[in-house]
Length: 204
Image (cartoon, rainbow, N blue to C red):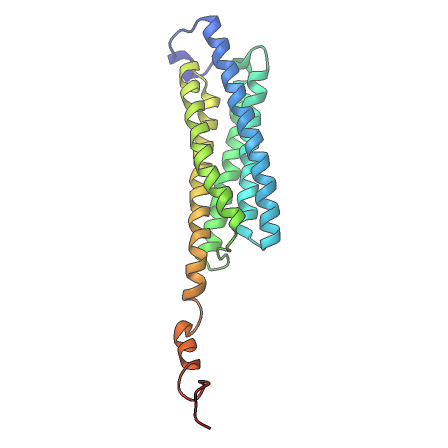
């Protein structure tokens, strides 16, 4: 039994059953949302040739792995007996998430990955930034009351995923600005094209 369970206030069998059912509903919602998010992000990223969106979709798959571990734990008759195994799976998914963040940051700082504009990606990241923190908060509160270390750990990973959503959203929104600033000569070149000698009113 985990330390979190030992420190939790005693719960009646009825209350514990209610909380366990709520955890199952939350992780089911998390899995469903992240599967949809992964499909949309990877598809949109492929169409737009956006490595950022494809990576965002792969991150969603990592979150599905973590939530699935909690779902498996609470699907059994004795969730506490499965908690250690669930925590190991969550730890592996955390490692995968950390690896993704490290590689993504390295590619960005090295200039090998540039943000690509995608309307679908902007909408998807914005929705995730709204949904994921809400699911994380619910699971964390229930996990604390239930004394479940795995539910709390999964809620933290969900929160990290919401931070990544914010990073992706910022990158996608800044892309049009970078495109304009990155054009050599920009507006000055257009101004030269309109200068004397190129106007339709030049005397013949």
